[in-house]
Length: 336
Length: 283
Image (cartoon, rainbow over all chains, first blue to last red; front, side):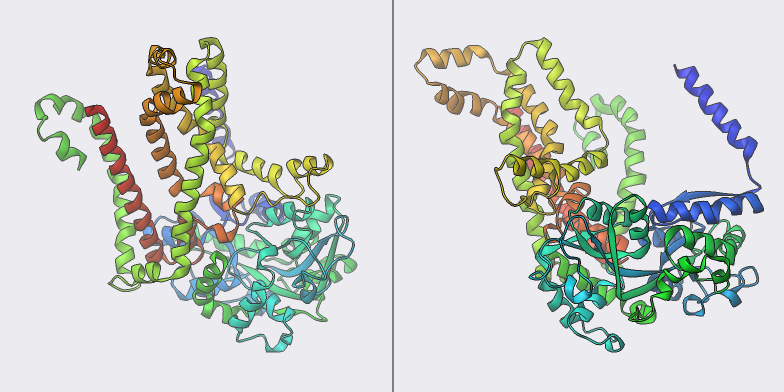
């Protein structure tokens, strides 16, 4: 038994040795259907073209990034993070400056480009509803915050991040162009009115599970997770009214061991074709401005950045500046 | 600490043993004690030198709620575990060996299954649209689904299930050592079944109850996965608060402070346990 195990280990080692790429690196993201697509459309072609093996890791953990950087033992080379974190972490010295001689930033959505980060993909918080489970679906944030009109559990993103506070304020009647600076007192007061009916989701996969099982028949979701869920046969209704957009960013933690490979990976991941393919598969919008021409026009028009009528752009620089303050209040409110 | 105790009064006897202990002690020192001390240092050094983190932690009603909640959950889980575990332990102790082996295997087997998988299984069972609620509704016993998850009920069920073996095993050990002749003697002297249990079996099995209860209570205090998945945010426990400070808010000063509070409480309880057992042995 023991020798067979040793043999198996040995042969695995040999197998890997035989296929060993010239370089390797680690990509970390949030798991689930999104990271699957990132692997298929970003990492796999990158490995094939540039002969760099990409190990997938996750989920993204800001505490881990800080620990790695401080310990000088950084095992993640490229990390998919939330946009507000990218700005804050860049300022805090936790990230490498990106090499824009390798990454062509002229084609990238300038809203998401900083010295330390570029956009990863562009998403919206939308109102999702399991149509089979309820008679009527909420269409607006005000509906979602109205337990009389729409009784039942509703689900929201658990962590402190752009999205829920904005939704609460919009539901309370704050005009979209007057959201910032955020009136936190008012937002939490509004959130108090539905607190007992909120089920929190802490990962995209969990949000899908809650909606599919109708544990929470409606709520606020990342739009791509609804697209993916609809493909599995769940009757999902998405309301884009006042959808709240935000972007994930790609960053390189300071002291990453494979910095060169990391820059090349980001260049590939943000290329027009990689972004177009990822967007087609996930329902998230590309952050490369040239991707549009590579995509099916009808599909392109269904993506978050085209739902511009009543769209609300979360203010990432506001969030980056107030991230700690809002977070502390957010978690204290949740625990109350 | 452990080293000084071992090399103290009983030096001559323990010298050999200490050599064997050394690798384990070094491992714990380097990979547990040093990192913990580093984290604790942060609690008084970040963002500036001082006790402001402790002030913020102990001065806030929100965080106090988390402390109270942690103790409450641990207490409830301990009580429920003992109440459910005691009859099982008793049965295991008096069952024929052939049967008790099978039951014991089932109990231990559950401990080998991945914690996360078990917790998710509970989630599926307990949710509003889960098997339990659906069955009860189909039977007409309830009209509205019961709220069994994302609250204290869910945490208690999920954690009790995980903690049960830690009550059953020590209790079984103690009950097995009780001479059945004592119970027979009690019955012969005219004690009823209830009296036999309350005045003979229960007091004699008290060391087992105490051992199991302390173990479960201490383990529950630091529990993370189950409360995070089966509890609501208003049932937050201390370990979740630490995780939040460390991972989401990236405020390691506060995280370290909360971790120290948890550690002090746990060590204090452990000291109680040690003392209790020493005195129990002394008797």
